[in-house]
Length: 309
Length: 96
Image (cartoon, rainbow over all chains, first blue to last red; front, side, top):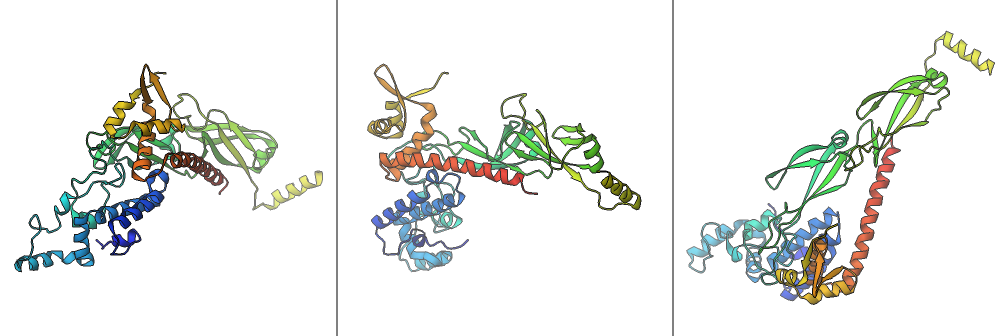
């Protein structure tokens, strides 16, 4: 657990007034607030940090303690023991001098719904983690929205299925509809953090990530696949077996098939999200494989062909 | 389609905000309210958006005009993010 320089986080020095702290915090919060930086994890992380710094420095009691121990916070126990033995001052609460001090920890302060619950171990160790103050009287705040990621492979996303995910120690069984897209977000209303002062629970947003498949490439509801065919089949025509998402199909190869030509198999692509029975297309690109090691006889025959044209 | 409505007065009491703030959002065209008799209501589907605007206004001290500008810019950001995702996928199709 490393020391965190809260002054540095807010771009201030130790002599900063409460007004300076408030101004610096608001300026940075406007820059990094999650609502102003959608899908920006780095901004979200920075917002948590400035929120934590503000929580520590805007409360005079917490700030005093932070200033007093600063980088020597790990030795605070020793300082406290020494102080007590000298009969100068004692902290509320016994045992850990940091636990329970500062009015019982933090709340999300000015930003109900953001930043709470994710303060660093350093902060928790120094100030505890319960209760807190309120910025707008008894305002009812919606609980914090939770964000989660669920990684699927392409074949998982092909079929409607159930998955159990664990969010904040709670198991949730969710249905993943077939045809779900990479980056799509599923909202589970009320599955976020509990609301405060009677406010509603936050929501859980699950972002779906789909791993690329080594054979099938997906664009929206269409699937693209390459299929190698030999030169003779390409020239003379024939049949070949092609992999689809639900098994193999026999595909006719027209005589004179060119390298790179695409064939569309209607309704053999990905299911259309929440439209049962609707599927995209499967595009098969034929890659004509040119023989590289010819026998003498084959070479003669090719030359014969060449002379005929 | 039936849409859930929430009375503005109730909402303001619950969230401890001034009704004038909600009216200002409506006047600027940021949200749409509806009247049932004498009472003004908001659509439940707008709740999360309004919650966001409350943070902007009360916590970040951004005025109504700023909120309106941010709303437009965020819409553009979302559209651009979707376009980037699509382009990435198309690029992936052409990679061996």
